[in-house]
Image 1 (cartoon, rainbow, N blue to C red):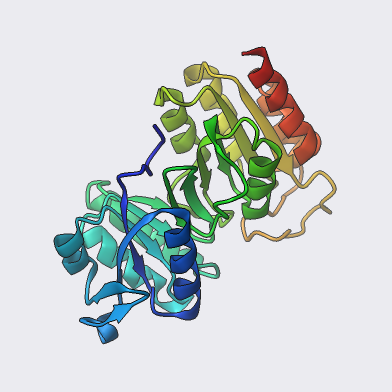
Image 2: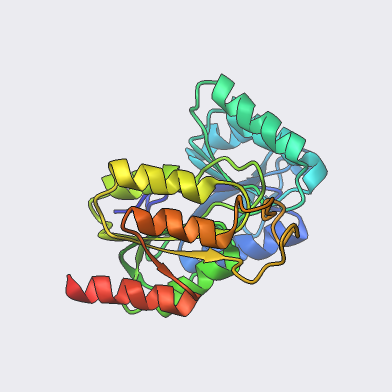
Length: 291
């Protein structure tokens, strides 16, 4: 079992005919994911990479039974693409595109909520979601880990890959890259809740970073609702104060949002926090070995 993405998931790609869409459609197909078509209004009725191209998400869903869309469209068109997917009521939209204006992200997130929350959004500016051995929606390399019983939720794409690789001998139920923008669709808390409820997940790795208060809120949620062991890493211990570091949301104001403040909040509720990604992997390794 896995969360949100399983071997039965049927994936369409909005922007499949573009350069990035083409490359990663090939990679998803090679990993065994069930990619069933693409969406490009200007190329509707054609085929690409051996798959049908549809004019709209609704048409693609009707013809293929798709329940996941991966978005590879330029930032200027991302808002409209996501809103189209929401209107079609597809259950999951994975927005890979980076550089999406925060106003646009806020608008399509609010639009999803106003439509009743029938569509879960992961991203934008994220690597996607992978359930090893079952499916892969996005750009997470499929060959860096194995199927197992660890759940992972991360703001950082590269740290997602590193932890998946370092813990490949134990393997993962699902890894979710939620993205590091100031406004994202799926949060640490959403993933923590899903992993807590997933019988195939025994323990959870949570990767955060400086900026905002998402990790502090996650700590409060863990204290009240998560009984499975959690280990964490917070990127940015050496970041200069007041600087945006990599992700648009990784900006510290005074003492708020610092890596140290997040580490203390997590440790206060029993989460073991590594000082480096490799130490974090070691802490999880100890938990899994003890099981």
